[in-house]
Length: 420
Image (tube, rainbow, N blue to C red):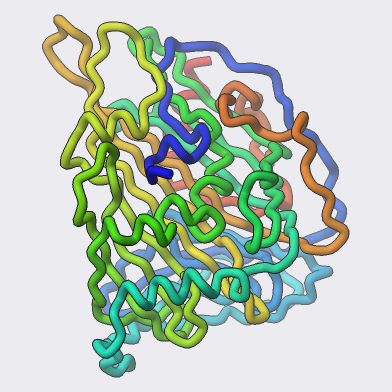
C-alpha cells in the first residue's frame, strides 16, 4: 500500500463554495460531577519563552490536555478522581508538578527546567537506527493497549485565508479504538458536542474543508496504522539516522531522523521518530510530506476543487504523541497543518490558505466498552462544520477539557460572531 495521505481514508482537503451551517447533531448531557480547575502558563525557566504543546496530565489517570501556541493551559479535574497533582511534561525538560487540593488554582506560572546538562551522552552507535525502528514495530502489541478503549477527545480545526480566520470548528468527540494488535477497520469517532463559525463575507467565496476531520484520531495514529510510516515493507524507501538523544517524561529517547531514498509514483515523508530506549516504544513522531514533486503532493491531499482554480501545496506536517500509563502507551495528541496557495485564472494575486487541526485525548476508559455503531459514526466524507451548530453559549464546554484558545483565535471568534 503506497503511504500517501489518500490512504488515511478520507482525511482530505476539499475546496468548496461557501455554504450555510447544518443543524446541531451532537448530544447534550448535564454534568454528573463537580470539578476543580487548574490553569496557567508554561515557560522555559532560562529563556522565559512560552512552551507550546506541553503535556498536562493527572498521573495515574487518563485525564489530560496540552498547552496552546502561547503556552497557556486549563485542565478540569473531577473531584471523584481524587487527584493530588497535575504533571507538566515537555520534550527536553524535567517534569514539573502542581500540588492540588479542593479549590481552583488559577493563573499559575509553571517554569520548566531544561535537562540538556543533566542528560549524559547516550547516542548509541552500535545499533543501526533502522534496526531500532523495526524492533519498536515488533513490540507494538506488547507496548500499547491490549484492550478496546473508548477515549474522550477534544478536536479543533481552523481555516485561514492569509492571516484571517474564515472557519473555526471544534468538538468533544468519542473515539472507539480496538486493541493495538488489531487494525483500525472497526475504530470509529462520534461527535458528542460541537460548534462552528463560518465567515459570511462575500469575498470568502472559497472555503476550505477537511473531510473526515475528527477522524484524525484514527487515521493519523501511526502505531495503529503502520502503513502510513511504519510498514516494514516501506522502510526500505527511507534512510535513517541516529540523532542526539532527548528526554521525554524523564525517560531517555532515541531520536531517529528519516528521509526518502527512493523515487516513487507517490509522495513520501521526512521527519523524526522518538523511541523510548528501555521499552522500545514510539513516544512521538514529527513528519512532513515531501514537496519535491508538487504534483505528487497535490494528488496526496486534494480531493476536489472548483474549475479554473490553480492549487499549489506548500506544507503538510504532522505531530503525533503517545503517553505512558501503567506500563502501556496510549494515543495522546495529534496535530496537522496544511498550507497551500490558490490562484484563480486571470486574477492578479494568489491567496495563501492554511488549515490547522489538532486533537488531544482528555479521558478514556477500557471497561464495559461498547463500540460506536456505524450509523452514529462520523463518516470520512463528512465535514465537521456541516455537522455542528453555531457558537452561542460562552460556557459551552462545561466540565469538558479542551485546548485553550489563543488570543488571536478568541479575537477571530468575536469578529466572526459580529458578521452574523
